[in-house]
Length: 434
Image 1 (cartoon, rainbow, N blue to C red):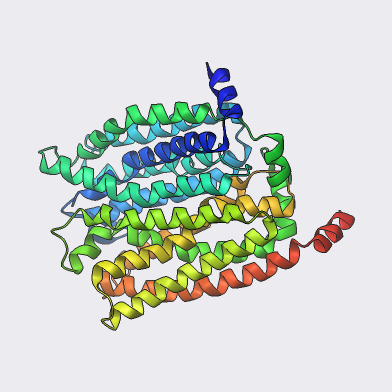
Image 2: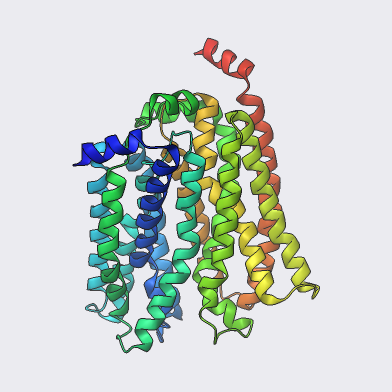
């Protein structure tokens, strides 16, 4: 049956293939959030000790899972870049099974040991993105497909938290709520993963436009970084800052809305993210109009730098009383995701094509992701372990401004470097040196 469906998709019009692949990828990654984020909908009253400091139980839970997720990103540099097409589906189902099993153990453990369950929950989930994106990269429509996939993590977190709050209000015990939410996502997860399995490999036309994609061993990874290391470093530094800000906004969204006096409107967790997702999908999808891969790389950098400056400008406008709180939270989120989304799809897919390197964009995605989540861990730990005397809202506003200015500068430098080093003359010189 798989060969029949793959053959039908390969022969179908481009829009039919794109709709199928985008739906499958969006749905699979959306469902992953049902196993990753539901616990954040609960309050988890009480205190736990971490590194000798007494913290709110929820804070310790968040740190434990994010540390596991960060470790997963470092594992993914090897696992995702070397994963062969025939093992992708099995790998995805294994990741979800381990994560859901950890949520089953969570309510059984004593409260003091529950952070270990959330660490194990996060440990495999960080590799899910690369496994899903590997079905989409290296195609003429990868920009569009990646945009659809990225929309999933913009809206999924708020939707899962809303569902978790609904279950709690319906009487489901707090400790069992995360497992219950995950159980609700198993049927659609199986459907969407089956749909992913039917996606045919890139065609000859795709390979001509975007370069051939195949697993990368350690030697291939070292060779690529040897050629373009400074550009990758600049991008990774920017992504560290960006990821820290994004994780803080995503994790503490309920607290931020409460600080703004909107704690009685949980629907804002989802409603404000929908226009952000649509705008980001539209912006990234427009990049399909840029056929030249080298110019597309620069265009992506321009969108990323513009997004970070949008977050800065909207924060200044909010502080000056020029816009309201809902508009500010929406616009600052839009700016954040205009910069964040390309890292997870179009940026590295286009960069691989511009450099004419045979390999996988998943490698570069996981290099940036691994260090990006290290920054998120550092920010969350400093905010909580150092007992900084600043409110959630003030901390968020300062982070929006300084992270935006820093990232805009780094992305501009990266664009300049990569434009120079992906020129035909530069590639020719590298070829002669090799």
